[in-house]
Amino acid sequence: MAEVQLQNVSKRFGSTVAVNDLSIDVKDGEFVVLLGPSGAGKTTTLRLIAGLERPDAGDVLIDGKLATNVHPSDRDVAFIFQQYSLYPHLTVFDNLAFPLRSPRRRSSEADVRMRVQTVAAMLHMESKLDNVATHLSGGEMQRVAIGRALVREPRVFLMDEPLSSLDAKLREELRIELKRLHKSIGATIVYVTHDQVEATTLADRIGILEHGHLVQLGTPREVYGNPACVSAARRLGSPPINLLPPSLFDSAVVPEGTATVAIRPEDIVVAEAGEGNAMDVKVLEYSPLRHLLILDRNGTAVVATTVTERNFSAGQSVGVSLPPRSLLYFRADGRRIPT
Image (cartoon, rainbow, N blue to C red; front, side, top):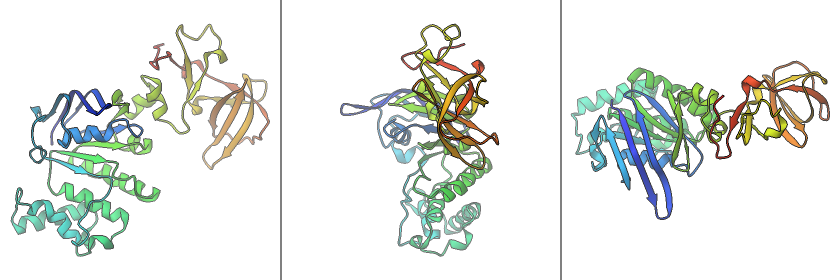
């Protein structure tokens, strides 16, 4: 496997800046997830690493060697796309074997069979090797697409939202498979998604992208608990973090220059009326694990979650405590104010 480095990389398409002065270091054997909304520059970043796009500025290094001008076929990276991109007329075996039979990587048939069967066993696809690709389920086709990359034994895997077209149950199953595969083969993986659940469950580190900028890079726990800016704070958490005006708080405890005070719904303490700040319950949503409450404080909506067994009703007044240790403060430009 290999280390991947992007050094001050920028890429523009006409007047649109897709990637802006991006620097990131993916360690050998690390699973890094790039998380962000559509248009954040995630897929363009993968394409720059793969060599499918050339940067307008900056450099791409793979295993410490400059790869900016290296042809994609010489970079020894495997790209797994959002759609399966299988050959529909070929069997699973032949789809998996295809990279090994190409003129550039031609292997003996005995070696092809051994490597295909090894990868099929890893993906629990041994019984499907003789099936035509079009006779597979969506989850099975995605496994074959992943297997076609694995069989090459590349130095780096690039994955562009490979689970987004699957239903929720299959996404969960394949997330587990991807994590297991990463642990077993020690692969260097750069994975793109807009799904925070995929990011937090798969990643060693998460990179938050906004408008082509890397706004934060850290472990899931670091990004969630210690966001560097408002956009990073909003990217993780369901329901999303509350962004509240400083006027709701005692000015003595709010740092100078604060434009937004943030608190996560699970950090809000809901108690009996008369305890803490009085708020009215506007909306409530029950689930087996927690209650979600949308509260109102002087016209400002505040979302809280609680696992209490108390029953709530719309219009009810409750006491709410916003623990100071759970408050995050941000400037008008979105940057975090250290406390």
